[in-house]
View (cartoon, rainbow, N blue to C red):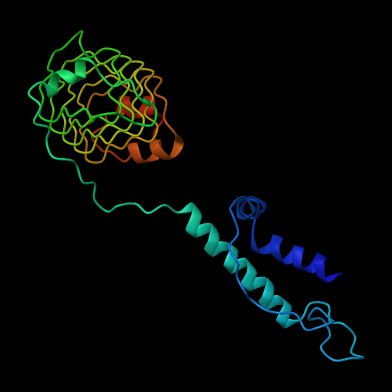
Length: 241
């Protein structure tokens, strides 16, 4: 067995193919792990000595290289997440609550906006026409009231709705990806054919919620199913185990 073949075998034993591909995907940093002896590439240190198949020094070199690659991958692939989310001061615009009736048309999917939509503490209870189909990307909705409102086909990508009330709201055909519904009251809400990918519901009230044909990722579903306020019918619709 050649030295190259031995190195390849060791790498495949230490890392699955997917991880090796991931290591090649990111830009490499320079690391100095070991140097080769002049003229023999580190195999057979004395003249006349038969080359070793794969000595201890070579194993250390390969291991060092693998650890260096892991360090580069961790540095590139692992984003820094803030421990707490800081919100801007409450808008002082007198008509800020009416901004929801216009919505936001810039960068819907990524929550990019020219000016933040601040709907905090606003009351849209039983609104059946003004919110339907609007884009509220990255809107600040904490402590707002939407009880009984028609929010079908609304786009709320990256909205912050912590502590808001959505009792009985119809979210059918809406796009609610990456929304923070922490501690929100969603009792009786309807998520029919609704996109919920990446959204969080920590300590949210989800009693009597309809999850018919909800679009949600497997990991997000596992987190959602931990919410004990979901009724047996809701758990059945979601496929919770």
